Image: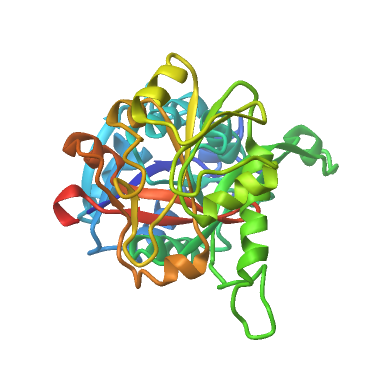
Length: 370
């Protein structure tokens, strides 16, 4: 199972730094006239060299936005678009990020500065994990690794299937006109999900260094409830991890069945597949599931009520404690919906919510590898 890496390089990022123009936004042409040398591609090369030889497919834009470097380094490369101008512009970055969001990429690696981060954030928000390779003059956003080599190490951890936490990090940018006039005026533009070097059980510990299961379940429930939206149908699956969410909502729970919750109310309990399809027809649906301990199944064991028809139009919210994930010893999660094509579409990396605003990326097996 290849890791699908989205790649976007802003080839002009950081041009102004060496020629004292305080950035590259709107001054790239002048920087080149003054002899500035682009560095973004070489800095991206450093990051990607950490994962050469690994099973990676790079999804990217043609030319120096990513495809040239990916091919040079020997990666399997799928080009999904071409910049409209040469050199590329912010519009090309936006178009590439939007395309990668729809392409099934597991993570977007991008090289640039705060302006590039703003473009990526505008296009994808927090819908897909991202990681920045620092290549700009000013790096105030928290979505960048501290060095290109550090970005490569984080990426390698993900490709190897290690548990890597995801955290929301701020995108900030300076007012460049004010900056050139000697005034530092940073603005907040949003947040994106970024892989963070994983420190096991850093948030919730007891004296023995192990997870306090009840505290973790409470955190998982609080994180889920915080993101609930009005008029969305939440299908609450089976298992004690998911049951903690129903407890926190103050609702009766079917431990070995699927319940339907909308707008904070329990609409139906222990539903059949037909009931779920009828009650949620033409409405938004999110399915809340956990894995079977020791086995790793998230679909097809104990929740056959979740039909392929329903799964195709629903989003998945997977919950589990890190202790439960670690017990799999690196084995992937398994989907067995009865529809091989659907199972294949769900393969790859999935966010598993492991605490309050805490998630890790974990692999779901390809059908042939289950």
